[in-house]
Image 1 (tube, rainbow, N blue to C red):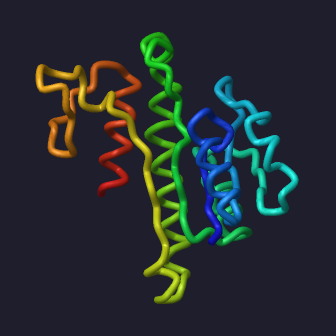
Image 2: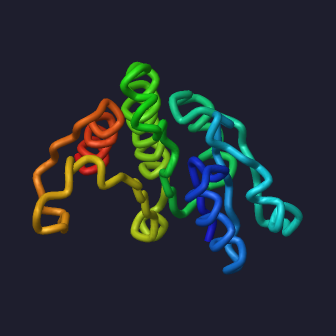
Length: 170
C-alpha cells in the first residue's frame, strides 16, 4: 500500500510515518517544513527505500495534484495543520489558510484523482482527516467528548479545524 501523509515531519505525523514504513508500507511525506517540522524524526527510516519526501504546501493545488499523480497513493492521511492555539489568536489568517483552504485543496485534488481510478481501486481508497479535541471546546463535568458532542471551538485554531472537519465530512 502507498500512503500519502501530510504533516509527516511533525510530532504525530512522523510517528505515523515510522509505524507505516516499519510495517512494510511505502510512504510519501508531504510537508511544508514549518516551525513544527523536524526531519530528524524520520532519520531511522530515511534509507529504507520506501520513504519519499515532497516539500509542498497542501494549499498548492497543482503541487498536490502532481504528487497524487506521481505516486498514486491508496490512502491519504491528512495530519498537516497550523496547530498552536496561542499563535492562532495573534495570527488567525495563517490558520484559516492552512487548515481550511489547505484541507479544501487536498480534498479537491484527492477527489479528482479518485475519479480517475477504476472501480476496484476506488473501493480500496481511503482519505483520513485528522482533527483535534479542541473543536469541542472545554471538557465539561462528564470528562468525555464523543462524536455526538456539539462543536464549540474557543480559538481560531479550533474553529479552523472544525471547518476542516465539516469539509471532510461533506
